[in-house]
Length: 307
Image 1 (tube, one colour):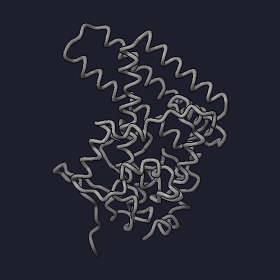
Image 2 (image 1 turned 90 degrees about the vertical axis):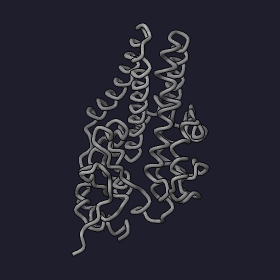
Image 3 (image 1 turned 45 degrees about the vertical axis):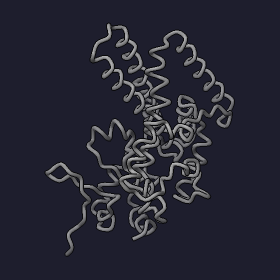
Image 4 (image 1 turned 90 degrees about the horizontal axis):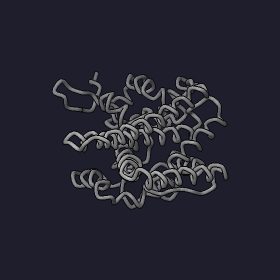
């Protein structure tokens, strides 16, 4: 079965799934911002104590957490680019631009590039998302060596030229450009006033861990299969335990195959859609779609028994 055939079976069932009301969407964004600021404040408070052995462990945990919340804001930009975050299309654009300001990005550039990713998945000539990271070779078939390279790449900073790009343009309008400049000024002022706190809990999470999460997410989504030629085979779901998913895959980011098959489905409904698709034999036999945890604790692919 192809992606086209699967869409024909389920498009009507998945049509018109509820998006967030506008006020709820803004509260979700503010919740992510509050989590980041709260974690930064907790880090600053931690540094006020006399240094002891738990300090670096807690500081690292806060750094990781802040990076995951930045990833959550990035995923909201992604949802807004598909106009699936809130039920008011114009508010999707405003929210996307606001989150892009906080991450020094351009919502308009992101949306234009990302929509080519869905239209031409894996085609480096037209998929502008993957075109920009072609040098990292996500298309290369997976082997122990390739997997190790994908793990190590962010640890040595090789991904940074591809993922750490501050977009300070006025593509989203002069107000967005002004606000990005203002945020940059605030960060610079914080470097002067609170250098250690700012370095550990703002600059490092953004430059190192947030960018690493983006790279590893792209690897988990597409590495080794992106050149398969069909959306049904070119993306994968990552069905990790729920706590891991909420922390490292915010906004149901782990159901990437479902998203590529049905990009009109709001992220809040991706897990529900996946559970519906699990009942479909053509979907449930795909190794990149469904995984089952055995009693031993190992993960294996679910393959329906032959009749």
